[in-house]
Image (cartoon, helix red, strand yellow):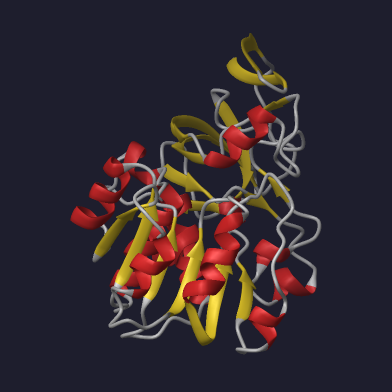
Length: 299
C-alpha cells in the first residue's frame, strides 16, 4: 500500500509499505477514507514530540470502512463506516477497568512506531477502539470527533459549571473545540486569545466564543480582565505551548480557579509557585479522552 512515512525528523516520504494484517480475533482491518492532520504530528515532524518518533506512519484522526473482521468481532461487519479511537489499551489495568483507558500505562497510540496510522491506506484496530460513524456525519467531518473528544475531556477535567467564566489561550483546532464544549456547557463569557484573526473569527462566529482578542495588540491579560466586569476568570485553558502564557494564565485566573493544560510545550515552563499556593489555584492536566468523552463527541 502507499504510505506517508515520517522517515526522520523533518522528512516525509511517500513509500510502499506492507498492508497490516489481523493478528487477533478481536481486530478489524479498516481502509482509511479521511485523516486529519493534528498539531502533534507537526511536533513529530519537528522532533519536539515526547513519543511520536520516526520512522512511523502517522495519522490518528481516522475514519474509514471495515474491510475485514476477526472471528470474535460481533459489533461490526464488512462495509461499516467507522471512527477509530487512536488508543490501543491493555484492557486489564486499574485505569482501563475504571473507564479511564486514556491513562493506561501500556497503551499504544495510532500513528506511532508501535501502531501504524491512517496516512497509510489501511489500519488495524481492536474492536473496543472502533465506533460506528453515523450516516449523517461525513468521513471528513468524522475526523473531528477526535479533537472534539479532547475538548469534551478538558472541559470535564475542569469541572466547568454553568455560568462560569472561561479563557482559551490559543484558538487552533483544539482551542476551538474547547470553546465549543464550554459554550454548550453554559460558560459565559468565553474569551479567546490568538495571533491569527481568521481563527478568532471562526471561534466567535461558529464556536461560542464571546470575545476574541488578538495577542499582538497590547497586553492581553489587561484586556481580558477588562471584559469580565473587571474580574478574573474561573477557568483558563492552555491550548498552545508557549511558556510565557503560563504566567498570563496565572494573572487572569481567579482565587480557587483552574488552569487546564492541553498543549505540548517545546521548552521548560517556569512560574512562581506562590501564585498557585496563595490563591488555591489548581493546575489540571488533560490527557486525550476516555470512551464516554468519545461517545459524547459523536452525539
